[in-house]
Length: 253
Image 1 (spheres, helix red, strand yellow):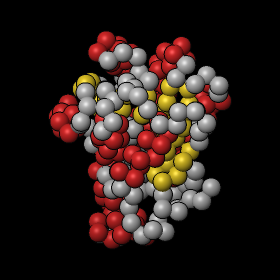
Image 2: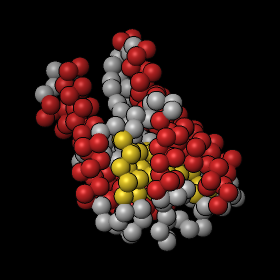
Image 3: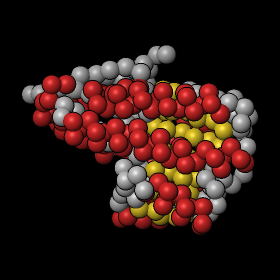
C-alpha cells in the first residue's frame, strides 16, 4: 500500500490511538480526531509519519464538515477512514433513560454515519477508499445492561453492510471490526459499572470480563489494530461488508 491519507476518530487513546500508530508506521499521513487536544498531542508525538491534530466533538452536526475541510486542506482527500470513537454506559432496560440512549447512539452510530457520508463522494470519484468502523461483539449478540450500547453497535454492522452493498465495484470497501472486551480506558469504565450494579469488586468484575472470553484475557488494542490494517491493505477490495470478530472465540460466526 502506498501512502494514503488516513482519518482516525477516537485517536486520543485506546483502539483509535493504536490504529493511528499502526497506520503511521508505514508512512501514511494520519489526521487525528477526538474531543481531547491533550490526548491527541500525546498520540501525535508517538507517530512515525506526518500527522494533523483536529480536536472535534463529532456529535455536533457541523463538526464533520469542519474536520474534513481541515484535513483536505492539509493532506488532501481522505482515502482511509477509521471510525473508532466510542462510548459506553450500562443500565437495566427499565432504567435506561432517553439521555443515555441518545448520547450512546450519537457517538457510536450517528457520528460514523456522518463521517462515512462525507468521505464517500471523493472516495468514489478516485475509485479507492477503505472505511472501517469499530463495532463490538455486541454488534452480533446481546448482554445484560447494554441495550443502548448493543443497539448502537448492531447499527454499525447494518451501516457498513449497506454502504458496502451500495459501493460494491466502486473500489471503496466498508467493514466493521468487532472486538470483545479490549484492555482500554473505556473497558475500565465498564468494570466500574459492573461493580456498581452488582456486589462484585472492581477486580472481580474485570476477572468476569476476562472469563467471558475463551482465551481468558482481554483483547489488546494492538490485536484490533492489526485487523484494521488487514482491511485497509486489501488492495483488491475483496473484503467488504464484513464484521470481523477479534474476540478470542467469544462469538463464533
